[in-house]
Length: 192
Ligand SMILES: [Zn+2]
Image (cartoon, rainbow, N blue to C red; front, top):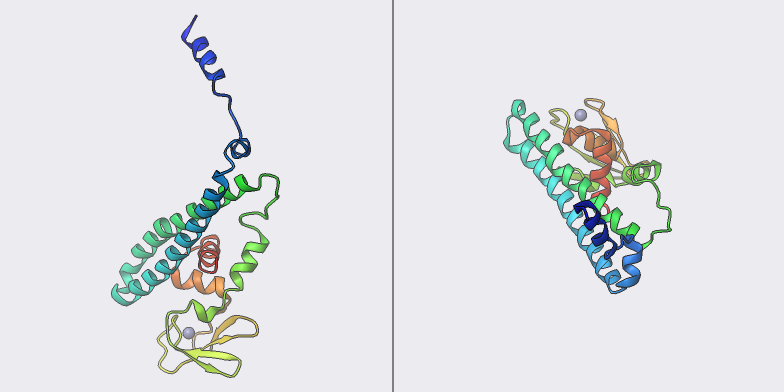
């Protein structure tokens, strides 16, 4: 018998099973998977909060000309890890519910959910309540008197000094210097 045939014979001893089939054999694993998903979600959230804190430090401690480098590190490493964690969570969820069709990982619903993150919860400066808005010093220009408004009804911001304007996704894109898709991922991780 040739080696390849021997290997084929040997493989027959261990038939390939899908993850769902394995779960039927070891139903105890379900509990572990549920626990694991919880752990991963906590880790993802902690990472996201940490990332925002890092952005704050970069802005405070690094001269403007060198910030691009640190923002690139954030984009590649920090957001990269968040994306990996969310993929892992998704994979485990599919193992638990193989027949359930899940909404697309990056679809309209994800964007909507990210956009609904209250802007006042992600800004890194002091805000004062003023009627149905929050007011603070604009992070996008040198603002001596507070001209940055967050409107609670629409969850949008507007700066009357530099005319910066947008929603939670745009705020993250501009302040963390990351592209659209990654901004959405970061926000989803924060309010996960
Ligand atoms: Zn401004």
